[in-house]
Image 1 (cartoon, rainbow, N blue to C red):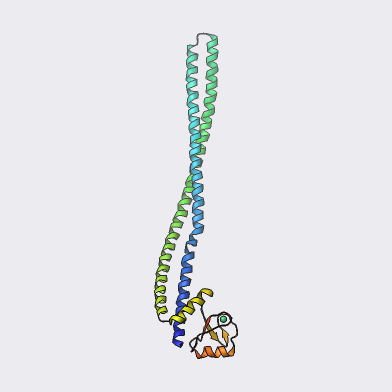
Image 2: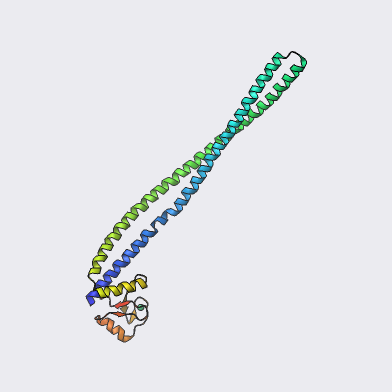
Length: 236
Ligand SMILES: [Zn+2]
């Protein structure tokens, strides 16, 4: 029986080890959450900046079209002026030329301003692009780390699981069944070392008769309080 308890203790260790590894494996992808959010945020910022550049470039083109129209008007006005046959036609031509000149000057100013706006927008977009590249590189590096750690944990889980299956084969089937049953109910821990008359898992004092039975190590005894299987740890 004592040998059975010692095998069960070994199994318990392996079960906890596997449980711990699986838990670590499960929370690993959470390490990427913050960077993933930052990557998405900078991506949105970059799209907004690029859209802004497209917008201000379109405004600049609109102004350039308006300028060409005024240049045409100016040419026509000047032609009218050259061909004027009387005072009335001369007046009309002058008016068109003046108006086109004013409009042309206005659009030329506007275009200069638009060129500055486009340049500023492009510079801002370039900065955000740099930021996005940095965040992406950081994310990729961490993702590679996470994948490596996942592979390492998977290998460990496989190895411990194999050892656990081996350990299970050495335990008496009836005892194993009881062990599994209690383990499910007690957060993965089915064994409790009995020390100094108390249960080492829940710290409840054990009735002296029960404690004596446990010390003998010839029967399967459970803690009346936490129902775990009681055993005596080998000296130490
Ligand atoms: Zn107990």
